[in-house]
Picture 1: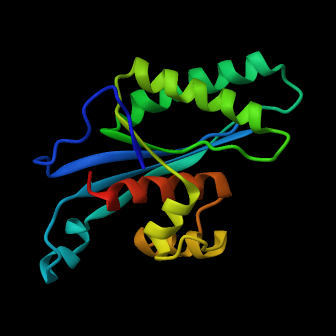
Picture 2: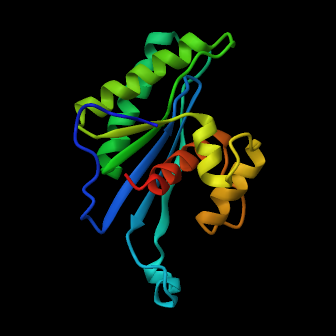
Picture 3: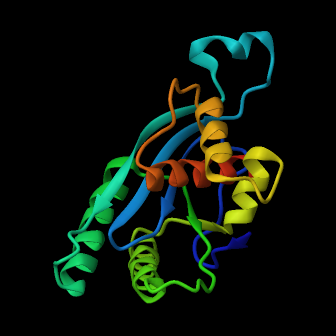
Length: 183
């Protein structure tokens, strides 16, 4: 996990916070937000109004494939500004970028750069996690498959089915990983 060097991370005395997970991409940028409470795990916390984590929202920012790249990045920029204004997260969790042997590596890196710019403009602290860290945090196994991670997300958020699309589910997994990290 890498920590941002800009704003200070979450206040450990805070009893509640909103975490936004972002799975960067150019065609689909996944997002998922959760509201977390630092409540003791007692029978009282099992009541619906005392759950330690609740789903707020999830989805994707989509850009059409045949649209010029500059316009696609602009759409991500504008939509992410709107999203941050609406959700007002205390912390953002983003997938840590590492070299992929895929043809869209540069495009994903460009979209990720836009995400980091918008986060800086909103002065929102962020954490970065590798896919293996997310898998480890949610399943206890760093090589878990996508279905195992989605099952863990559904279990933790008490969802009857896996969140869709996959990019949104990945973003929720990132948000949960940040919450589990306790930073």
